[in-house]
Amino acid sequence: MATTKDVTRSKSGRLAYRGESFPAYNKQVRTSDGKKKFKVLAKKGDQIKLVRYGDPNMKIKVNQPERRKSFRARHNCDAVQKKK
Image (cartoon, rainbow, N blue to C red; front, side, top):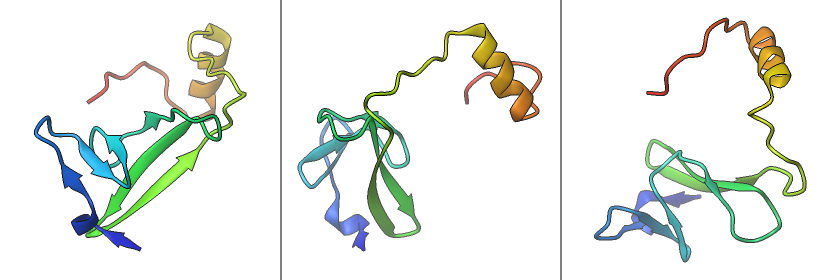
């Protein structure tokens, strides 16, 4: 497994790993290729790993009120919370 020594930081503050750019550790980014929808440079302690996930053919439906209501019911969250 790779370590943080394999990652370089640019002047703008972005991380570079294996020729790919990331805003920070543990922040998801949409992929440019069609194999997966998202990628994230995961960090746990000094270890890092590039994880790609998500079906590129599935749509993200966050703006549909019925789906939002069902999600909140499944996860027991009644009110919308602000992002930190």
